[in-house]
Image (cartoon, rainbow, N blue to C red; front, side, top):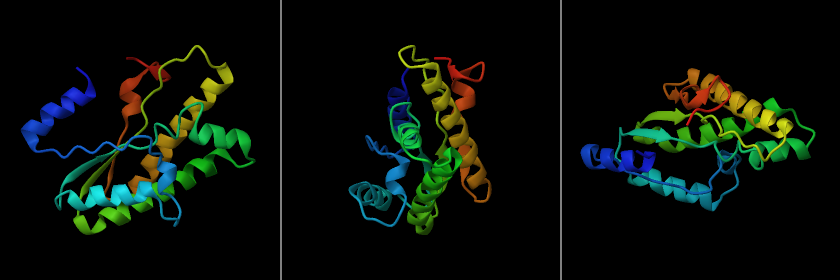
Length: 166
C-alpha cells in the first residue's frame, strides 16, 4: 500500500489536513527574500487548526544526485557541511517562525535512503549518500535544541545502511 493511499485512509479516520507542495526545496525557504514558495506555505499554515500535529518533509529534492546541494557543491568552492547547515538553518527557522503562534507539534521527517541508480557514477552516488547522511544528522542536531521532533526515515528505508530496501 502506497503512502498516498495510507494518508487518505488516515485522513478519513483522523481528520488530517493533507497539503502537498510539489517541487519545493528546503533551499526555497532560507533568506529574507519573498517568494511564491513562502507565500503558499504561509497560507497552508494559516488554515491548519491551532495545536495540530504537523509532519514536515522537505529535503529529498535538495539531496538528489542531480539537483540542489550536490549540484551547488560541484559548482562552488564551499564546504559541503556549510551548504547543508545553511540550508537547514534557513528552512527550519522559516518553518518554526511561521508556526510559532499556532503552537503546533512539529515533526520534521528526514530524507529517506535513495534507490540504487546504476546510471550514475560511483562518485555521484557516494556524494548523494554523504549529502543525505549529513542532512539528516544536521537536521536532527538542530532540532535537539527545540521542542520539535526528528523522524529518521533513512534508518528504516536503507538496506545495510546505504540504499533503499524498498
